[in-house]
Length: 528
Ligand code: G4P
Image 1 (tube, rainbow, N blue to C red):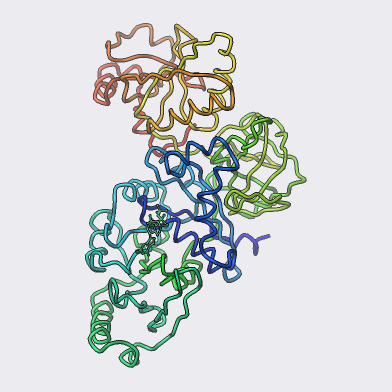
Image 2: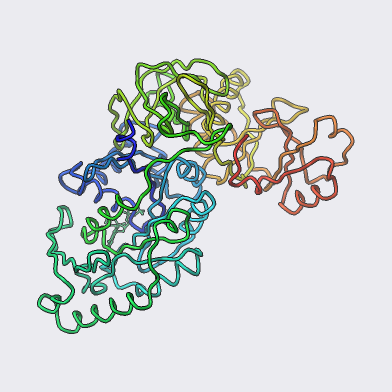
């Protein structure tokens, strides 16, 4: 079992939209032999809407809403790539997916460097101490210089970038990379349309002049010399705690630099490690299975109310024959099969090991962040909860569908698609909270297609909130400001909403007895 676990690398790609995440993913599959020719993943991206109506929304908006988990083998290692949606309104989903990863690959566009979404996602990795490996893409375009890019990473993200390879030429001249570990130059030859693996010639640095134009050859020798003299040494232990990020250069579109990147990646990226449980670290080689639900998705088949829980196996070995228990309720989970996922295709999974991601079908009884286990009880600490900044009230005109509305919203809240609050004086008044407004559209769409409810979602003026730590009885003695409102979350905890974060801070100081802890303080805090 341990051998199986130690050959796993579970990671996510973080990037700003258009930096080349999809292209890099596809090229990783190409080099792993999972697909024979590039184009398959992109093909799926455009055809998969056919399989589900709900994906229509995704297609219409030209964005990727659903995270996908991909599994592929490379040089005896098993790589689990957790793909994450790029659109900023779905960053909450992305953040949770990162909680299931052991490392992250940060893809930068050489022309744009560190962009907004990269910065946000990097912050999550840094807060969770997820080691980050950098791939600077689109070196075939004349972008910023490698040195400028390295400086930008250092300055913007506060992490020390250590190039483990170095580009040979920029823009049209980009023909290879110098591998600092082996001191060899790897020269690539183009293939038509970048659909096949590129032929690579390995040349020692002192012979590079035989293969490159004289000025390019002397430039690369000089640059390498400078790197060796002035550059900091890469240290694996600093990488593992988020102080160093190894940097690789390439062009995913042309397959340049993919193979050196993958080879280094499997050596550098950490194997699954012990994860924090409520009673201390849970070792990966615990004999029985334990895993955590990091995403729940409505099943594509609308006739059956099935859901898929995406579970990160955190310890032991999963076996599809075993009975699973939900730690929160201590109830046995009635599952309807388990799958390994390849893009949108599913394949029955018989067994899986720590580091793997599996999809478990179920009807009810699972909430986001839940621990599933066999044998001795174990419970992992909750997933990070994010600070909602958009609030809306939700109603349905048709009184006869109220029950379905409540059921649908409860389900969507369990999935983490939105947060749901109830007003104490009027239980019919339901309030939704999300990180981005696009999530409300998804809710509206899903309520209509899955629950037959035509919901009216109206934006509210609230922009911030906080949990109230004091007992409910304290609330009666407090004078609230008109710009605030008290509501209850799905765990029946009192919450204060306000039209701006300042009011929350003001109330926290003025009414200390309420013990308000602002949502924003919980950005990376566990839900429990
Ligand atoms: P994303 O998932 O991060 O959003 O990015 P994606 O891979 O979809 O790439 C965004 C665009 O950048 C695509 O172009 C893609 O072909 C291009 N691209 C990716 N890698 C490279 C590279 O190494 N060099 C260059 N020059 N371009 C690259 P598009 O025009 O939006 O799509 P398409 O017409 O190529 O399919």
